[in-house]
Length: 100
Image (cartoon, helix red, strand yellow):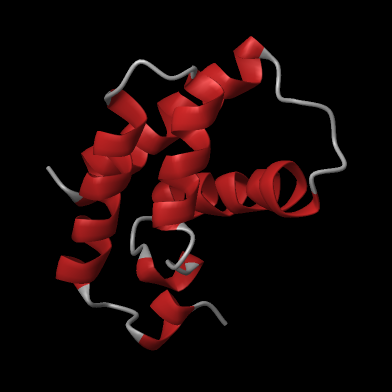
């Protein structure tokens, strides 16, 4: 279980990680791929159980499964521009559901 799982239902912690992750995703001049990677790293301590909204939980689980292949394993090809855009949209949806 992720570190965040020990803090499940700690809404402030989840919000903080999503806010920081979204800031990393949206700022800077780096490529979208690099910004996604930094945002993923910030959010990776969360656990699906930290998300009470079912759609947010599904988005987070999808992001984590991609992260395991793209960031941790590093054996899959780079994500396409369309896939990176999908990741960005999912991160924004998580933010909208949990933070706003």
